Length: 396
Picture (tube, rainbow, N blue to C red):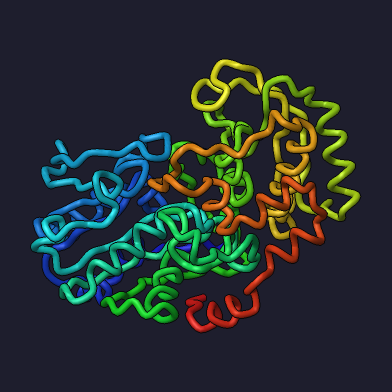
């Protein structure tokens, strides 16, 4: 295995790249912004650029990746160790203000994404790009691997009516782009006229999953402690829009799903039979499980359900499997199953499930207990056009 060299490590070691970083610097990062030896990016950049590094920025979940939930904001402060301001881009604003950007000539973006449209770090990048148009601020993205690979595309393309902070670009749920490629998509396909440069990785292949990179995993948000969780997340994130627990408050959040009162072994048997009957049999196993959430949905109540175990990443269709599991929870629970109507990521008038899926068609499919064939027809609308546009901006 040849270890992947990230954009951060290239910047730290290659003098010609360092020469491209002009003037005072802002750094958008989080706890997973590390090199292969676990050195923190802030330390590396401060050692490299000294007092030119004048401001730090954190995305959702905070600069130190400690905030658990949606719509829980983080504050601005001066870092007690680095002695420079830290601005939250998940605060009273998700777009950087003029004051935050004042004095910055280069904004370095170094976020570990997980390859799913609703994961908000790409939304933060897009808002930054739009804000910096005409401001004489260069954005430099230090690229990192997409942990769920760069080949498999899954999930509905976002429809315009469902644009939100969990979906700002018309891309599929599992888009198979790196953070840098998402930036290029915004610039070249959607004509965001900002000064953008991507410092690409070395040795990353589109067929790579995280386990192929040789890099250490540091959780990019509090409920993704494992690379396997990043793969299941592309599908299980949909349960955020339901009253089914996705395991928040457990040690394997977003790898499990369950509900109080379900007998897990019989449910798992029925679920496997239905999935196999419709041809979803490759790349994963389901294990019956009972788990106890310590916070959020069903706190303190035993939930019966399943643990999703990826076994062959290149074959596991996480989005499709999770949608089918959701359908079976609906079948199992009947009227007890709900799509929740609470505010979700600052949207107050649309259902969370529709914002997550990028359409209301999947919700209707679940309610009607539709077939996998019907789901495929919903999912693949616009895929050909997306693939054609995507090919124009691929960096690897």
